[in-house]
Image (cartoon, rainbow, N blue to C red; front, side):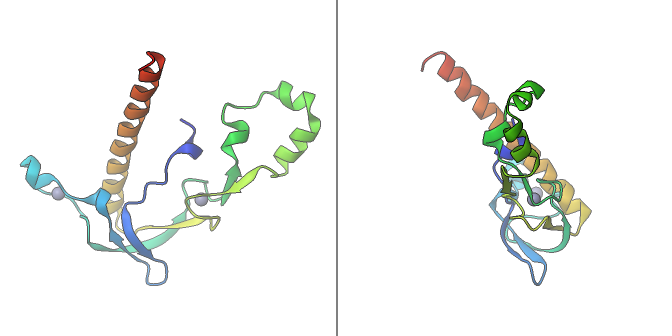
Length: 146
Ligand SMILES: [Zn+2]
Ligand SMILES: [Zn+2]
Protein backbone atom coordinates (compact mmCIF):
# COMPACT_ATOMS: atom_id res chain seq x y z
CA UNK A 1 0.00 0.00 0.00
CA UNK A 2 1.19 3.52 -0.72
CA UNK A 3 2.38 5.04 2.54
CA UNK A 4 0.36 8.19 1.88
CA UNK A 5 -2.87 6.17 1.92
CA UNK A 6 -2.26 4.88 5.41
CA UNK A 7 -4.63 6.20 7.99
CA UNK A 8 -2.97 8.38 10.52
CA UNK A 9 -2.87 6.10 13.56
CA UNK A 10 -3.13 8.22 16.67
CA UNK A 11 -2.44 6.36 19.88
CA UNK A 12 -3.18 9.41 22.06
CA UNK A 13 -6.40 10.90 23.36
CA UNK A 14 -4.80 14.29 23.33
CA UNK A 15 -1.42 15.88 22.86
CA UNK A 16 -0.48 19.12 24.57
CA UNK A 17 2.06 20.80 22.29
CA UNK A 18 2.91 23.41 24.88
CA UNK A 19 3.36 21.30 27.97
CA UNK A 20 4.73 18.52 25.69
CA UNK A 21 2.66 15.83 27.31
CA UNK A 22 0.13 13.40 25.91
CA UNK A 23 -2.62 11.22 27.30
CA UNK A 24 -2.42 7.65 26.02
CA UNK A 25 -5.49 6.68 24.05
CA UNK A 26 -7.66 3.69 23.33
CA UNK A 27 -5.19 1.91 20.99
CA UNK A 28 -2.89 1.56 24.01
CA UNK A 29 -5.41 -0.26 26.16
CA UNK A 30 -3.71 -3.14 27.96
CA UNK A 31 -5.19 -6.63 27.54
CA UNK A 32 -2.50 -8.49 29.45
CA UNK A 33 -4.78 -9.40 32.32
CA UNK A 34 -7.47 -10.78 30.00
CA UNK A 35 -4.86 -12.79 28.17
CA UNK A 36 -3.50 -14.04 31.47
CA UNK A 37 0.02 -12.74 30.97
CA UNK A 38 2.12 -10.57 33.20
CA UNK A 39 1.79 -6.92 32.17
CA UNK A 40 4.97 -5.31 30.95
CA UNK A 41 3.25 -2.50 29.03
CA UNK A 42 5.24 0.70 29.62
CA UNK A 43 2.11 2.73 28.93
CA UNK A 44 -1.62 2.05 28.96
CA UNK A 45 -4.70 4.04 28.02
CA UNK A 46 -5.16 7.11 30.23
CA UNK A 47 -1.51 7.49 31.26
CA UNK A 48 0.11 10.87 30.87
CA UNK A 49 3.46 10.66 29.09
CA UNK A 50 6.25 13.10 28.30
CA UNK A 51 6.74 14.06 24.65
CA UNK A 52 9.61 15.47 22.58
CA UNK A 53 9.63 16.99 19.09
CA UNK A 54 10.88 14.65 16.38
CA UNK A 55 11.12 14.87 12.62
CA UNK A 56 7.82 13.69 11.15
CA UNK A 57 8.30 10.14 9.89
CA UNK A 58 5.26 10.22 7.66
CA UNK A 59 6.62 12.90 5.31
CA UNK A 60 10.27 12.52 6.29
CA UNK A 61 10.30 16.05 7.65
CA UNK A 62 9.20 17.68 4.39
CA UNK A 63 5.79 18.71 5.69
CA UNK A 64 4.24 17.76 2.36
CA UNK A 65 4.29 15.15 -0.37
CA UNK A 66 2.93 14.66 -3.85
CA UNK A 67 -0.81 14.00 -3.83
CA UNK A 68 -1.06 10.19 -4.03
CA UNK A 69 -3.87 10.53 -6.57
CA UNK A 70 -1.27 11.84 -9.00
CA UNK A 71 1.43 9.20 -8.76
CA UNK A 72 0.10 6.39 -6.60
CA UNK A 73 0.95 3.81 -9.24
CA UNK A 74 4.20 5.48 -10.20
CA UNK A 75 4.90 7.66 -13.21
CA UNK A 76 7.11 6.42 -16.00
CA UNK A 77 9.75 8.49 -17.73
CA UNK A 78 7.71 8.14 -20.93
CA UNK A 79 4.73 9.88 -19.37
CA UNK A 80 6.95 12.79 -18.39
CA UNK A 81 8.59 12.84 -21.83
CA UNK A 82 5.18 13.05 -23.50
CA UNK A 83 4.01 15.84 -21.24
CA UNK A 84 6.85 18.17 -20.29
CA UNK A 85 4.42 20.62 -18.72
CA UNK A 86 3.20 17.94 -16.35
CA UNK A 87 6.81 17.12 -15.50
CA UNK A 88 7.51 20.76 -14.73
CA UNK A 89 4.46 21.08 -12.49
CA UNK A 90 5.24 17.80 -10.81
CA UNK A 91 8.82 18.67 -9.96
CA UNK A 92 7.98 22.21 -8.89
CA UNK A 93 5.58 20.93 -6.24
CA UNK A 94 2.27 21.89 -7.88
CA UNK A 95 0.77 18.57 -6.83
CA UNK A 96 2.09 18.62 -3.30
CA UNK A 97 -0.37 18.36 -0.45
CA UNK A 98 0.17 19.07 3.23
CA UNK A 99 1.32 16.11 5.30
CA UNK A 100 -1.76 14.79 7.09
CA UNK A 101 0.24 13.65 10.08
CA UNK A 102 2.26 16.77 11.00
CA UNK A 103 -0.06 19.21 9.17
CA UNK A 104 2.95 20.71 7.44
CA UNK A 105 4.89 21.42 10.63
CA UNK A 106 7.56 18.85 9.65
CA UNK A 107 7.84 17.73 13.25
CA UNK A 108 5.65 15.60 15.47
CA UNK A 109 5.57 15.18 19.23
CA UNK A 110 6.77 11.67 20.06
CA UNK A 111 7.05 9.92 23.42
CA UNK A 112 10.31 10.80 25.14
CA UNK A 113 10.70 7.30 26.58
CA UNK A 114 12.18 4.86 24.02
CA UNK A 115 10.42 1.95 25.77
CA UNK A 116 7.06 3.62 25.18
CA UNK A 117 7.98 4.33 21.59
CA UNK A 118 8.90 0.71 20.99
CA UNK A 119 5.61 -0.41 22.51
CA UNK A 120 3.62 1.98 20.33
CA UNK A 121 5.51 0.93 17.20
CA UNK A 122 4.75 -2.70 17.94
CA UNK A 123 1.04 -2.00 18.36
CA UNK A 124 1.01 0.13 15.24
CA UNK A 125 2.62 -2.67 13.25
CA UNK A 126 0.01 -5.13 14.50
CA UNK A 127 -2.69 -2.64 13.60
CA UNK A 128 -1.40 -2.15 10.05
CA UNK A 129 -1.04 -5.91 9.57
CA UNK A 130 -4.66 -6.31 10.63
CA UNK A 131 -5.71 -3.59 8.22
CA UNK A 132 -3.69 -5.13 5.38
CA UNK A 133 -5.38 -8.48 6.06
CA UNK A 134 -8.77 -6.83 6.07
CA UNK A 135 -8.13 -5.06 2.78
CA UNK A 136 -6.86 -8.30 1.22
CA UNK A 137 -10.01 -10.10 2.34
CA UNK A 138 -12.21 -7.35 0.98
CA UNK A 139 -10.37 -7.45 -2.35
CA UNK A 140 -10.73 -11.24 -2.50
CA UNK A 141 -14.46 -10.99 -1.79
CA UNK A 142 -14.85 -8.44 -4.56
CA UNK A 143 -13.11 -10.79 -6.98
CA UNK A 144 -15.55 -13.55 -6.13
CA UNK A 145 -18.42 -11.12 -6.55
CA UNK A 146 -19.78 -11.43 -3.03
ZN1 LIG B 1 -0.27 -4.74 29.79
ZN1 LIG C 1 4.72 15.14 8.15
